[in-house]
Amino acid sequence: MNKNIVILISGSGSNMAAIVQAAQKGRWRERFGAQVAAVISNKAEAGGLAWAREHHIPTASFDHKAYASREAFDAALMTEIDRHQPALVVLAGFMRILTPGFVQHYDGRLVNIHPSLLPAFPGLHTHQRAIDAGCRFGGCTVHRVTAELDHGEYLDQAVVPILPGDTAQTLAARVLTQEHLIYPRVVERLIS
Image (cartoon, rainbow, N blue to C red; front, side, top):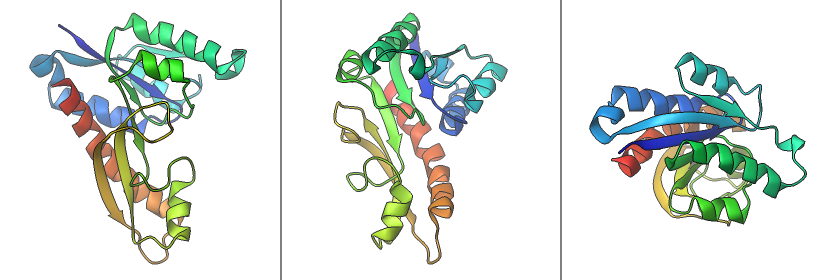
């Protein structure tokens, strides 16, 4: 039985690439019957789509602005995702808040990564908020997606020190290196 993984992105897709590379290196297809079956974006110009195509992964894009409502966009997205019969839907820098109906449709199969140590700093601008709050540590969290933003079950976390003189950009870069380690590890655990 194939365990298809569908990854949703909005930008460069660095976490998507880390997952694809881990799948290849870890021989997920041979060991678990698992493969990245598609990469889908809400932005046709997302750099990660080109990377996925270069690695022979089917891609699709849906411009959310072309739909009359969030529900209409999510319905089109679900139709495309469901064509691939996903065992797991992975949000990897997908910058859209999903409707409760979408989240319910993929209940138990939908995961995300967030660039903070949840429950601290859900939402946007996490690195600057952590610096402004005087935190000594930042990090990232892989979690199950629920209808409540950044509040699902935590599956893994990585801690990164906040250094004197850190900016949101320098902290983000250090956190991203950890995201590339823990996200593939969680995905492998979920599909193995």
